[in-house]
Image (spheres, rainbow, N blue to C red):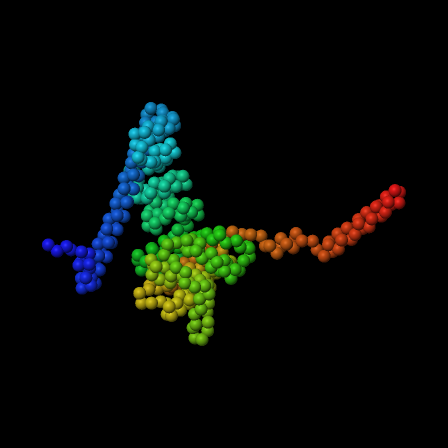
Length: 368
């Protein structure tokens, strides 16, 4: 019987587009299966940790045991299961806290059981409210956040900011696009990596954002891609300049951003509507959804924004932003540096002292 070799099954005639399609389908199924297996293993591990924590919690309440029992359990579990890690006193204490944080496993299954144990430790450390822990766990699953990214979002209070921009999306976009677009925007945006003067103008803020564009994209959220700064559109022979232009891959639409260094004014919405119409006419492709606008102001008044956006036919959101304020260096230098008159007076005093010193030395030499 002839031996079948690799070359006999890889003849050019056999490698058809249909074969490649089949191979890709199978690879995707295998990868999907591996991911599901990984999630399943993680879920079982988190469930085990929850059960261990629940047992410790209940026994401590029933028997009146102190924290010493955790040290004893850590030692004995390590002896009985030497191949397993995760039974340190610190980790057992987290398991107990984990059971306290999620008194019912049905609550745990909503999200916490689907994220790594290290992420759950962060949620226990940083958050007291159950609703917030579940929310951040769900966002971790949706966006694939690392542990460090999760910590960053908690510290910047994303829970309180996400979806809080004032928009007219509910009347200018169809469902479910309006909900998704609303959930995409925040208020306020934390640009605290920018060190700005209190009276910094739009150009200065814009330049700072572009200089730190990677951090800006992280703050904007998943799906944003930077297109251009100072994007120029020409209408009837006149040139107009858009501060910042982004594209959102989940929303499948351009996002026009206008920066304002002061409070919101109603006329900003009219200008934004014009920019959106120009972008849709000149840049939008058939596969793209209509563009949305985001006006970022230093401050805003809620009712003024709501009245303004009610009259706009274009989808626009208004939010505020924060930066790290620094003192005006020019003023600092002006107050710290001596004036010309002060310098002249000091030189005169120094010269007088030098002459006096020379006279004393001359007198001492004469007496010698």
